[in-house]
Length: 250
Image (cartoon, rainbow, N blue to C red; front, side, top):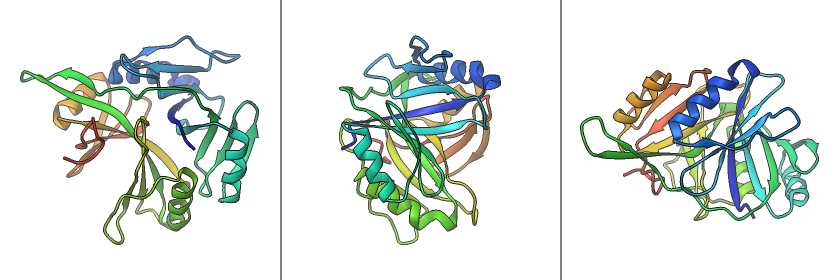
């Protein structure tokens, strides 16, 4: 059983400071004490509830986003994941794996935690609006879609929300109290690696977009229900019209 979920912002040394500065401001969080032998881990601590967004300075690779799933028995969870098609990469006090399509994730120890409330921001035209990082989207090329979609639903035990046949966006229903939803997204790309990005729910997407741009983000595309941006380190993420309190579309 998954009791908590944590999203990790994986950053190279060159992008470390700008990643922390941007996401701390974007989420109204503070930084925990740094951890690890090289101070390479840190939690972005929300003003309300418990932390579920963390950062890791990586020694190699382009950076990106990965997922930690908190479970009562990491060894048993990892063994079950391998039977579903995952590949185990490393094991210590936690277990590092990749999905069938290559997305990194970890099983880590469970602990009691409380989901934060949405953050309230002043609206430039008066009043307030809210936003919250609340979703990790798994971006899946077409040739990986069936296997990856089946894997994440079976791994988490979270049922798919009803969608139209052939839908390219398939949300999984998270249990009550968990901070992150999972969204499976079929890309137009015919092949390639599976990766992930963060999504924020916001009650006023225009105001939230302006705030993020002022913090250093760049708008990449505007869609009917979401806006695609890149943070100052080049990491893609989205602002969506979903309700920050429930995660659903209004």
